[in-house]
Length: 215
Ligand code: Z5A
Ligand code: MG
Image (tube, rainbow, N blue to C red; front, side, top):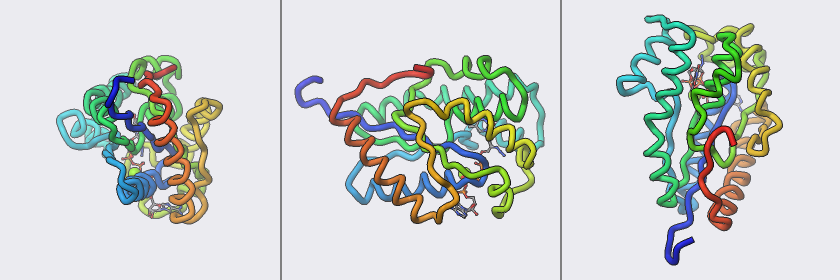
């Protein structure tokens, strides 16, 4: 790299079923890495604010309907709108932590909506690829027992079972790290933090280039 250039930040994604604990773990990891002196930017998808986010929020709350393919592109567009921000942060040495990303798009649109998986992947082809994905593994039955489960679109056990099996499409990828999501929140956070720090250091040390999906 150029003399004096800042080592780049890592791009870390959390995935998993509804109520698997993604938001809890993203927040904890962001706080832990900040405590250790790292620059961190936390983002989430869908981002329910902004013009696209409002449409997605209304769709999830079943206030409006779209065709399946339009809905898939809405979620994908939400990610495309954030690409410059993610790239700028990572290139300036900031670690970006995202609560859901394109893997959710594929898992829900193919699993819950029944769209062809390869068609789903196409919409996100070319997005900045994460350096690692922490897949918080909780069975649909376990997630169903957690509080807050209920009113939104897709929050049904039989739909979650299909989403769970669609997520398995990614399970053999090198960036995919399944984490046992049935342990207590603190143990999971500790395990994730150790692994995330390894990713942050190896990305900085190797000066690995930013890659794109679906490399
Ligand atoms: N969607 C899509 O279709 N296409 C896309 O491209 C994208 C998304 C990006 C909203 O997502 C919907 O959008 C979602 C997928 C679809 N489908 N649905 N429905 P969201 O991210 O806004 O919301 P969510 O992920 O479905 O739910 P959530 O509430 O954000 O769940 P979570 O973040 O995984 O979990 P949490 O909030 O950290 O924890 C949930 C509860 O479990 C809470 O009471 C915790 O205290 C408890 N919890 C957490 N961890 C544990 C452990 N380890 N043990 C016991 N209890 C725990
Ligand atoms: Mg969440």
